[in-house]
Amino acid sequence: MPALLMFLAAAVVCCSCCGLALLLRRLPGCSCLPRTLMARTEKPFFRIAYGLYTRTRLGYLFYKRQLKKARERYPQGHSSTQAIVFSGVKVVPIPVLSDNYSYLIIDTTSNLAVAVDPSDPIAVQNYLEREGAMLEAILCTHKHWDHSGGNKALKKLYRTCRVYGNACDDIPELTHSLSDRDQLAVGRLQFQAFFTPGHTVGHMIYVLDGKSGDGPDCLFSGDLLFLAGCGRMFEGSAGTMLASLDTVASLNDSTLLWPGHEYAADNLMFAAVVEPDNAVRDKKFQWVVQQRLEKKCTCPSTLGEEKEYNPFLRTHCRDLHVALDLQRGAAEEWSHFRSRVLEEVRRRKDLFKGR
Ligand SMILES: [Zn+2]
Image 1 (tube, rainbow, N blue to C red):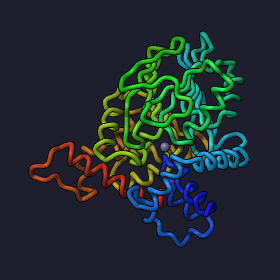
Image 2 (spheres, rainbow, N blue to C red):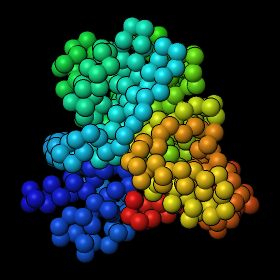
Image 3 (cartoon, rainbow, N blue to C red):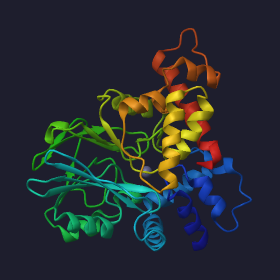
């Protein structure tokens, strides 16, 4: 029985995430399970596995195992990344686990640093030492272990470090609970937090004010939004997720998107299926393929770009409605119709190559 429980927990560990069915196919003895069994979040099997991953120690143990395996497999990280420097601010993407990104945002005047979703504490600590920075705060987007798993170890090393997140999610070591549009500061770095439920009940995203460093705003989107994709709706309806995505869409087009995972290639392949005639997407895909051939990070994109090709931000577009063969009912509210569109895009994405 414990083996079965471990298997179930394993099945949800890539929970951003779209990797459940893919993971199932990789696990011994699971090839007979149809992709559709795990592809929809409302299936009973999925709900059991998800509960084990998020609410029991099995999830944590599996995260630890995945961390160990990823460190062995990718001693230099799964992708090569490049820091971006504005006047007095440095954003450093850190490749962790098999496809996650954590981030350090450093006020280069004071050398105070903020870590976003530091799931591998050793990797984050190495980067902090390399940059000569002091960890002042952790911004946690949500409770899933591949985003929050390093909080405890880092809090031990940096005892005064504040840990921010939403109290609805069970964030390890949370010291400062945030609500929608709360602001926080570390040195000269100014952030605003937005409550964006849907992937989890307490998911938050964080926007670094560009004025902190005379650059563009930077969005750290966790598992709400990826390059050309969005997170799965584990703990919210399509309407809830749509409201969260609309929050993102309301931000400046020049905002840089720093997502929680490297999913760009898969996401753009799927985007081509639901919206075949999109030249902007084609061009981005060609660039992403080249980047990934060299194992280079594909972030950041901008929100302006995302609105051009990310189907999850295009539920208002007629081309997408036609491609999905969806029509608005005569008396149907616009937001209700867009929720249906989002649900259908998400459903198709869940089934697309099992990711
Ligand atoms: Zn997640």
